[in-house]
Length: 492
Ligand SMILES: *Cc1c(COP(=O)(O)O)cnc(C)c1O
Image 1 (cartoon, rainbow, N blue to C red):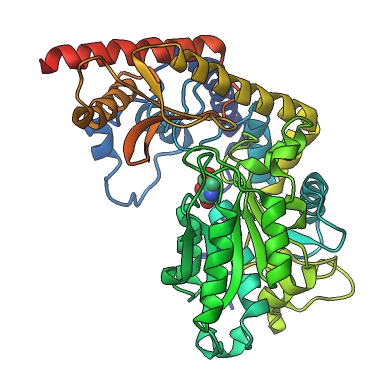
Image 2: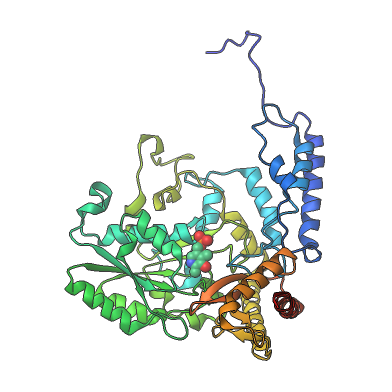
């Protein structure tokens, strides 16, 4: 034990010695953060990190501190000007959400509270329970369903499929491992399903060869006849069909599986029905879009994100499991040092650590709670509908333009197209369009991404952006046209 009379005993702390000085830097940072978001439209969408900044960012561990003001200065110079760009109105790459002004405040407050949301009895858990319950209502899940906030749909899918595996493997997976399963467990998803499904199967010991990639129809929805055939074949071969992953919004084209039909097949075959609704889930908020994901309420588990089509700051995802008991049975463990007590801080309701692999957890719920409470669900419905209308608008512009070609019927909020200048041979179009996308990004004009549709490279515009306006799509079309002409001219 330290001796209190010992000279070396210090009541030291990392708190600021001068809170007023700290307050000044903090207020400056907040003010500048607000300006940064307000003025984003006037900056380039993206710019590469300069070599000098990369060098600064690879310097060794500092033994002594430079203080907050100097660190903030370094951040302003080296970090702040070089973001992904997804807060910009012309960022439409991959599926990146925009972020919300409310998140600037809620993230700061969550940091001030610094709650550990693994469990125990404190307000943050009640906030998370409320957010999860709002999600349950939004997606039409029954009372008794459980849910937990996670980093994103990738983690949500791992959790959903872990519950499925443990419930259906036919052995005690927690004790014996998946090797004890009497039969090989087979999962089905469309060939358009996200790579996170593959990763989940690998991580859960099921292996990606146990994923049957079912073909899609011309709207990029899973072919139900082919699915049924694959299930029958696997049964005949002595495997155990165990799970179907439905897509509510595919990453390539925004394609939507017929979830109600998948639910029926799963009920008939005794399969677990998981839905990847990473961005599609939020269609549930809109009267007009809700029918597109009909059947999601019949699934056994569903994973989705707030950081995509609800624009909430990263990272924020959720998984819901219809049978809350099975969910808990997959993850609950309480060693002595985590015992639940009747009273005090170790009491309260369910602990979130019993619903996933993580023990320590951040207060993710606060930014979602702030968003839903301050804007209201209807505001999100309006923005989501607006993004869908913008996709239709862009698709119409593409169709009307002889220089451009639509690559897939626009579904939800995703448009895939390409430039196709006259006399440019088909074999050169992939390179041309990939250079157009690189050019758009490098010049800071816009940030779409690319994908392949029917084995052709497409410029892919996924609109999960509440800042985009009509003029931004006009600017995109003009810039694609201009770059196409420029590139064709320099090539010839
Ligand atoms: C983004 C995405 C995922 C993965 O979600 P993360 O939040 O990035 O983990 C899964 N499926 C689809 C359809 C997606 O768009």
